[in-house]
Length: 186
Image (tube, one colour):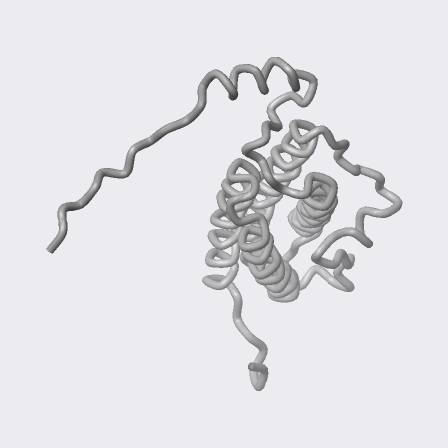
């Protein structure tokens, strides 16, 4: 059995200082961030659109929901809407930090979103729960892929999406507790 050699941390602080001064106009983006920033900003703008569509769907559902359990479900929809809006704002801030501009154009929002937005035909709580549950499952899948794609190239953006992913999984778990599949459906 050999002797373990300690992993020594070593950086060239002088070089890092010079680089920081030379490229100060790049804000918080340093050479340690190896992401394709243009593509990353595009993907994060898809997340911005997705979060806004989810915010709008939850808000609309909270307002029009009816039925015996309306208040409980509407409260949950309002809570989820608030968290989706927070995600929207945090990802928009990150895009700005990366030197991009968050795309909040309402005319293209739905087209850029990973989830769909449909006004419910009625005020059926189970239909609303189902559609929001489906949307959360879509977001969980696509955000997981975004985390994998970012990898180590931009740890800050990856951690942001990981944190949002955890909250989306919590939403799906709450919706799963309330979802009652129609008889005969899978």
